[in-house]
Image (cartoon, rainbow, N blue to C red; front, side, top):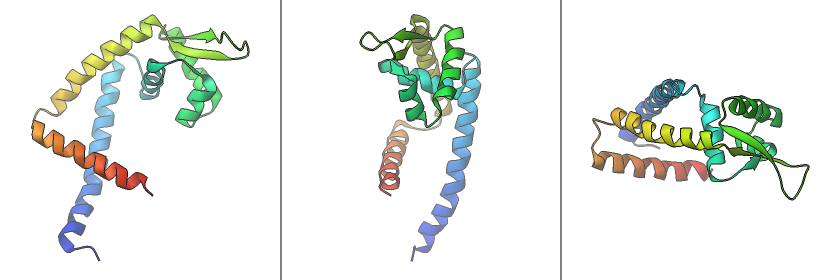
Amino acid sequence: MLEKKRLEYLQKLMPALSNLYRAMATSRDGFLAQFNLSRPQLELLISLKEKPCTTSQLAKEFSVSPSAVSQMVDQLIEKNLVERIDDEHDRRVTNIKLSSGGKTLFEEIHEKFLDHIEGKFSSVSIKEMETLLNTINKITVDVTKE
């Protein structure tokens, strides 16, 4: 049986985490609006930062259909953020990669987002951030064991 104090904290922790998640998501989405990007579009750009991927690879990574990825890629092509390139070894394969404009925008977003998020943590000390990060990592390991 859970000790009483631990149970009380767990009952307070779950809604607090939900509130934090919603608040951070709202803040992030508001931040991305200045770049005319949605969260899924940013996530796609992040995935392409390291290397080009096929539509099928992206669909598997995001657990969506290839047609959903194609629609998002079309939107990002219109914004000159990604481009389709033919695979040099297999003409049937088309890769999606960040365009030079996409790379530039990604770096700008990254830099500005760090400034944006730093403001959200202005009342949190370095030591508290370290403790929070360690605690989140610890919980993540325990949750992903299941």
